[in-house]
Amino acid sequence: AGEPKIGSSASKLTELLHGAETSICMAGLQELLRMFLRSLESHEMHLKPKSKKLIIRSIHPTEKAWHNAALSSHPDKVSESERAAADVKFKSISKAYEILFDDDKRDAYDSHGMAAFEAGNPIGAEVDLDDLLSQMFGMGMNGAAGGRPGPRKPRKGDNEEQSYTVTLEELYKGKTTKFATRKNIVCKTCRGSGGKDKAKPKECSACHGRGMQQGLKSMGGGLMTQETVICNPCKGTGKVYRDKERCKKCKGERVVEEKKVLELYIPRGSKEGDKIKIEGEADQLPDQEPGDIVFNLVEAEHKTFQRAGPDLMAKVNIDLSEALCGFSRILVKHLDGRGIYVKHPRHGRGSLKTGSIIKVAGEGMPHKKSDLRGDLYLLIDVDFPDEDWLRKDQHFEKLQALLPKPGNPIQAETVDEVDYTEDVNLDNFGGEGGQGEQWEDEDDEESSQPQCAQQ
Image 1 (cartoon, rainbow, N blue to C red):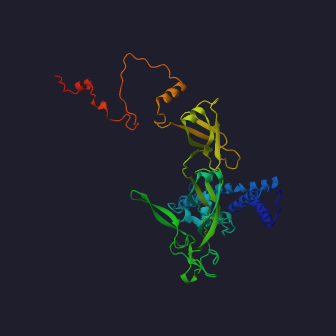
Image 2: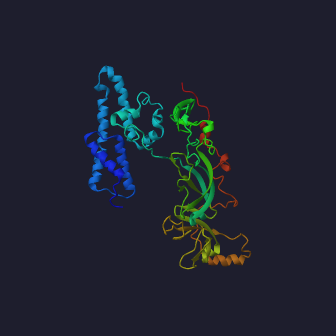
Image 3: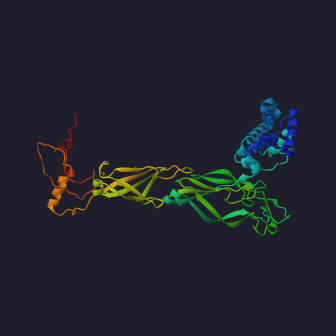
């Protein structure tokens, strides 16, 4: 932390900065300065305000240089005979600006050159972008003076995603597990080149050294579109080795398969949809930073508990005597094996009925990276005794005397005593059938008769 030590790299920066005072700031210098500032920030280092101001001031003139170059090459600024050439150069300058000042496009150019932008784009065939930059700024797109390509920033490979099913108990307590996997790693024998030591590759004839090819992609309905894809014979390198010059270990594939044991840690309180990442353990490719293995958590259905965010809910059955007279017992076994003991006295709390809810604070799911917990909701379902639990009439009379008396009866002038059925459900409620089918409205019947035509 604090003021960084000024070494040879910083001395070169200072020298370049002073040289830029009388000329256009080069595009590569701009990128170099930005990388320098980002590097300092990532290591929590800080320049003195005057030094940082000097670097920032040296970055901005590049945009003015692009503006001036585009303005001088505008087709409206040249004669009729030079307009076609100026139009091509103007488009190339605009494209160069677009690529240089967009991080994703600049990475694509560093990896594949202009082949990454040729699909449906005429710019690039007539004018070589590196030559144009070299003429304008004395350097190429990669940021090295004299048009020579500088060091490329390694791109990160694709992540490998897969689903991972976990139980609610594992989400409640957390889980650490080890598993074996097979992955591609860069061949150590040829160091990812694919060829033997001192062997020289030749240009790939399929892509002519570009590493990319034009392919056709189906859009459905018989429609096809062109797309740029990685060349399969050279795997995007643009170069291939003859059979006898290929690495014996990887057979020219540049990678070999390796078995590795990895550890997966699922924090307590995780939930469905969370992504658990194991960084840098996806397949390796030369000149790339390996991607990550990403597990998408899927919560298995639980037979007792339902989860909603940090809260849990469980259905609890009690008998009629407990609902009326109270109870004191374990109502449910929790996810960690503990029994949840609840006292519900016969006096003061009132009786329970089906649909009543008991809330136990702090017995829900744990919050990740915290000691806080959600709540546990117990949904009461009262079980009534079998129909033959009372056999004698005097027992019914005693029970009726103990239970609350019914309210005032309903009064009606006309009373019909009807037959009924008990063992039914609501599956046919509102459906066809019953006596309703025999009903016909007399008005509807009359309206169905043919009418005399009006004269």
